[in-house]
Length: 410
Image 1 (spheres, rainbow, N blue to C red):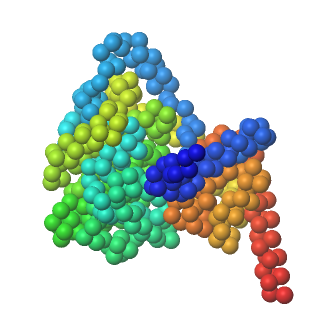
Image 2 (cartoon, rainbow, N blue to C red; image 1 turned 135 degrees about the vertical axis):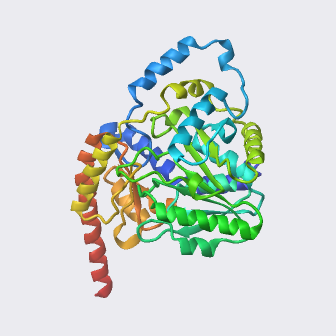
């Protein structure tokens, strides 16, 4: 009987380090099968709970009825020209800077597909990519796919980019910085002044190195914001700015895997990068973004889900947890909370909540131990029923820790 290695060593490590988010999601499915779906309170996965706008369904049916045989064939790897033209106009209005055209947009299989083709196009083995902690954990795997090296840089106490720390982390091997605002897992919106400063920092480092260093803004939550602050464009902030985004959250289409990469027209070498993205789309096996969704977007891509539902959920859970004694920053966007845990052991506190069938994700999965991530993209009744369990768990956990401290002193 063969007992040798079945899978690659890199994938073996990937299984061992697999996303805490997915681990907790799978645990939720197990508990729901055991106790019933109404008795498990799953805050683990950022799965949009607000349905797409009604207009989306109307357009989807219309496009499906009108589609012909040719509409489902292969297309140019970068996507349909009509869709890219629509997005070029929309993004030009949003950014208010350089004018985009179809040669600055590549349609992708969600933001994840966009990040993978971008990193494949940029990285040589050993190149470094800076991540601002806390970060979306899949970034680590995407970078590793292409031999890149992750360099973690902690954000400040308010989860804003720490420009001094980032400057200290820049090296001749730095190829890119990835940031995410509104941020997953904190819900923080990065301040414009910080992002403008970050853009200048990247440009200066690129000039000193004699090669581009890219500032990549991952923006699937950009329409899910609760303040009136202006959109801070990475394109306007940095000559080497790149947007990667999707319609997973703002249109509630996470399962449809549709997004795009937006390049800065003023970036040196933009034509070569566009060509590389097209080749990477093909050679990584995506081939092209979903054809049907590309045809739907020009008819409803300017819409968004009802953000007020998420705002109402945020207010309910933030105020409830605050009253219970949790320490956290109020989210300004996305649909996540990132509270501190007493004693700093996020895995132990996650386990304490799990015993109450409340599922969250430990902060170490996002590069920041000592916190838990709570996704409030859930029905309101889930929050209402879970709040007493959150409160009781915190109170019991603090009492148990205090008792242990007293015993150790005795």
